[in-house]
Image (cartoon, rainbow, N blue to C red; front, side, top):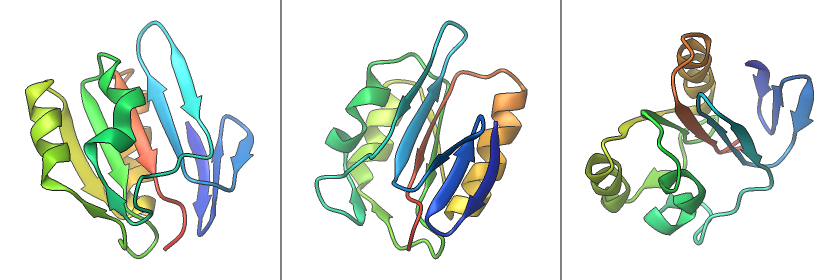
Amino acid sequence: MISHYSFGSLVFKNKTFNKDLIIIKTSKDEKIVSNWWRKEGHYLQVEDLEDIWEVPVEFLIVGTGAYGVMKIDPSVEKKAKELNIKLEVYKTADAVKRFNDLYSQNKSIAGAFHLTC
């Protein structure tokens, strides 16, 4: 679970991350993609989520930053729908809450978190 989020910092399983990251949790595995970069910094596109598309997750929770600055390309929603992944987009603080809720329910989830703006 994520125990803390504040602007530029997220703590997951007692490890602090200061760069954007992806967390993927399935019934078989857990993976962290630290220092996650996007093709265009504040614009999320399909190719930015290749690590997620390869894994059978039920939910994709996207944190768009403390102030919601990161925008989502419509193709991300289309790709998620094609793969039968429920896409939910929130400012990062709310994305963390939703991620933790699903994590505690033992769902197969991916969280893509922009930690700053």
